[in-house]
Image (cartoon, rainbow over all chains, first blue to last red; front, side, top):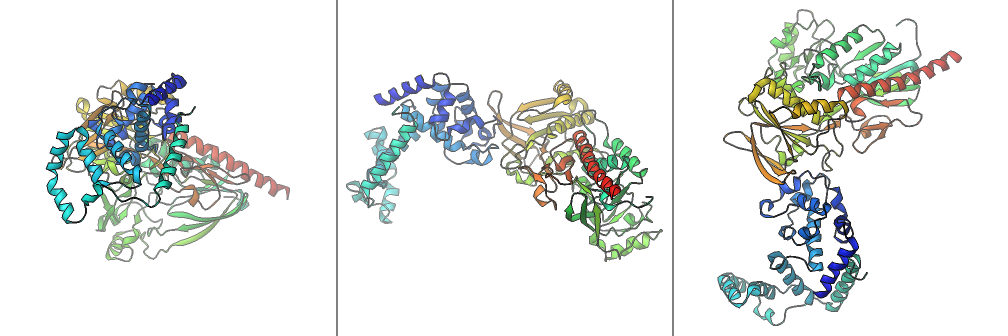
Length: 210
Length: 430
């Protein structure tokens, strides 16, 4: 985590007054932000609209206004459900969904993303689960999610789902042995090499090695 | 026409709207021979379907009447209606255009008395009111129609209705044996002035045009306000005929949108500002308009009109592109959803009627013009090829208001005159 904060400080020093410039260079599809003409169709079309603090339209304007802290520490972009309603309606064809995910991911890398954000928790659990073997271990994934808020909460959550679990078991859609050793993809080492390479490329782009 | 002139000295004008009429008249008044070809049964085009012009709120009938007067008094222009150019061959100074002429089923004996209209029973959607009402299948397009001659819709030719029209005519003007004809017209230069058409509003799916009766387009609203329109000039809503006193105008409906038309249609802001004044005139203090916009584009001197409307307490401006519209099944009111850019407030506003300030697209896309021209990415004519004698005019070249269309047409007429003058000099020299 110390490294991440360092990354944040490096970014701050480098871009000082131009958060827009930082987003353009380091956030996935960030160079589209300047194309927004503030019409508001994304905000009005968002299925989760009333539940976010800042709509995409507002986030784009905040980026241009240099409101770095407010944007990166916000949990708004974590609320995106990837329904793509905004993307298909945007009159300038901005890849809004991708930018939202790009911002969330960038904030996470810098170590400034909000803590205890359920979407972020789920994403992390999913990611850590699937990169291990190249396949998602559904049983462990589910259990990690149940127990993320502590033992008691996990047991309560698991019990409430037991009838569904039993039905899955009967239908042979849930193998309890997966808890000990899940099935893996054929070339696990290859997957790890690939992920390492991808990480290197991304770090280079986001300035970690500069 | 006295004496004979070389066919290369003729100017062919395609399209008989305000642009084509202007180009034809400017050239003809300079002494050039002109053939003016119009697809529909009348000249006047979309200008004839406007109630008022911005910014002075004067009536288009006035300008059209002047042009028709000029036309009637000029022996240099030959007008062909119901005629469509299907092919153009040749080169600058020597073009041959193939023109298909559809049957009118009414000859020049017609006095426009209207007996055939009364006799015929069949009705068809009225294109001069954008299909908002029905008209008889024997019709005079509109009050300003030129030529002032009736037309029989092809659907009644060979039916009992056709015979009814024929027997009702006291002047022997109905000729049911007319057939489609093909002509070849030779000319030295061609002015392409086929104008514009409104973008298909049904393609803007979140606005529900075609699904909800109380979502209409700005060209339809123009007909509602016109005393010659389907409601006799009453601004009422299509669903139940209730007076529409609280009207939403939605800007950039189709325009400035990569999913629809990528260009700014340029007239829509002014059209909505103008139409807000129709609402005020019809309902006084009770007439309320709300204009939903991205930014208001009232160019150069139109700014004065915008400032005047801004001061009108009956007109409210909301800076927001509306996200979607839903019509309330019970009340028929339309509810507009979106987020206001000035403060990012979410709204759900109820109105009697929603008017989409619909975008403008070329009625013939440049790629479909049967002659080579340089096209822009919206299908407008950007310019003539080097060495070509085919020139664009009016809304075939860009999204223009009437004033700018007339300027563009005068410029096109001048270019065409230069071509035929060169031909004339070559003729003299030989």
